[in-house]
Length: 270
Image (cartoon, rainbow, N blue to C red):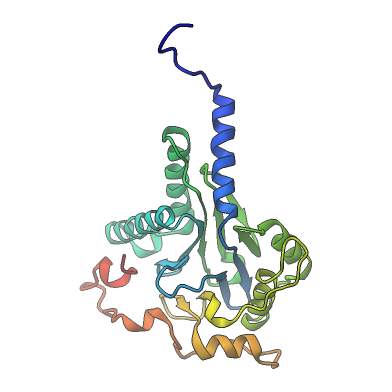
């Protein structure tokens, strides 16, 4: 036997092993559901941490959600904020789109998957709320850089297939925010193996929305008493009030003078 002969692995087998590795890592993460409601797009995930967010603002009308390894998708989030700030500052704020951001993420994920020794164990959604429901954009990106244009809803993480199957049967256009949250939370608490369902409390959830009725920065977090009311009220027409209960966007002062605005004042902090 010749000493030092390299071990050969076919490209097909190498790609398959990397894909299996990434899928297993993603499946270990808690699921996130992204679904449209009458006034925007909602993001719901099981996440008891108040500091390590899986859903974040990227730009005025764009948000990011992810499952998998936190340090890897946090690097992608920060890169997305920088991309959006630079493009909005160099050209125009309207030039920052979910489509452009998804293309940038696809190139990064594809390059890591094919060129690095280990792929990213992440799956992400980039969503942009439009002036009307037909103008909403939701893109799902997988570990290898594949992009899918989703409509209505998407689920990622552990048990995502079972959740999406249930969403196809139960989700409908025009649901208000409370109905959408109740549906998503119920599916997140379902046992994919057929065991008893868990009842998730507001403290175990991370909930945010892109609200098309907000003036410019549409992202807001739904927490505390507001989340409890949305999950427990019996009023079928209930929805989030206009006040910013717990909304992270309320703590930053944004200048109204376009000539004095700087990207770091408008974009989310890293």
